[in-house]
Amino acid sequence: MRVRVYVSLKPTVLDPQGKTIRSALNGLGYKAVADVRQGKFFEMSIDPQTEAESVRSQVEQIAHDVLANPVIEEYRVEFLD
Image 1 (tube, rainbow, N blue to C red):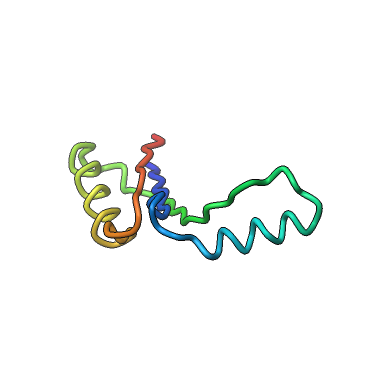
Image 2: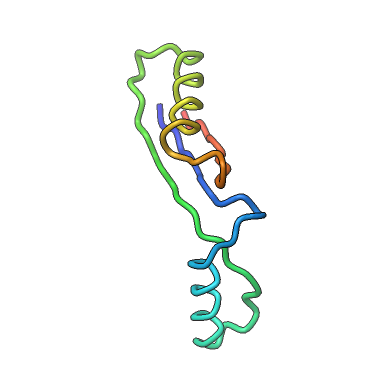
């Protein structure tokens, strides 16, 4: 089983790296880019012998406790297989 976790800053949190990327893109001539928000992406392979409900519970806990800082970030989990 493969799982993807997308982590991004909450909309209310300033994103200086995203602003720098937007500025660089505008400077390169991509004037249509109005905003950029940067984030993180994780892909995990899970042992196929693991019970599906256990996987869901564990991955949610990993995303919340380890991969994201819930004070300033939000996350989305995607189960692929």
